[in-house]
Image (cartoon, rainbow, N blue to C red; front, side):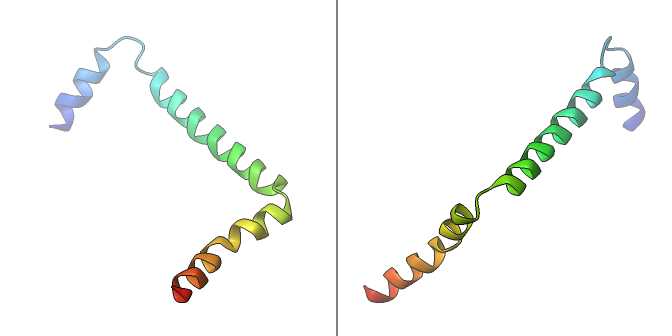
Length: 62
């Protein structure tokens, strides 16, 4: 089965660029995500981290 898929893929011209494009998209996404995490403001992080606790308090009051 794998030989059939490999042979079929080899017959497609220009297919060797797709793994490179996939790797670049993956790498760029995580670099941008890492940059966003590093540059995020502490006030925003604290505000967002309190959201689950606020919902839990509202549920217990009801």
